[in-house]
Amino acid sequence: MGITLEQAEKALQAAKEKARELNLKMNIALVDAGANLVVFARMDGAWLGSIDIAIRKARTARYFDMPTGDLGQASQPGESLYNIEHSNGGLITFPGGLPIQDSSGQIIGAIGVSGSTVENDHTVAEAGIKAVL
Image (tube, rainbow, N blue to C red):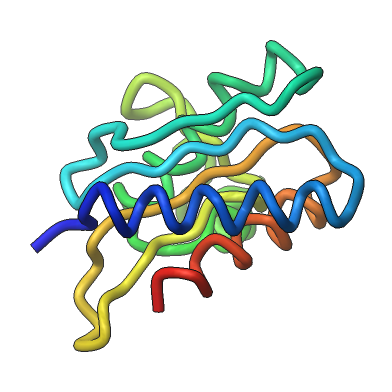
């Protein structure tokens, strides 16, 4: 079963709280197991250009069931997945997208965050996931 709306909203709220704690303005997207958008928020003042990035981070994490930063490592020149970011209508291969698993380890969706450094994006995404576990 995929992520429920209630779970997605809980993750979104936790991610927004973490962003506020860090004084960040973020775009936050959650997708279900089919990579369909479930919830999205653009915090006041968050970059417009990061809307698409947050959604693509969430979808990328679900398409490959791995953190987007890990996919980025595998897509460097000379690595096995070089140029993968050009597939699937465009992927994001830097940190900020994380798959979400249920208690049995089944992937139920993913979160994508964009609007700051990739380190901050990842931290805010992790806060969202912790709220679902």
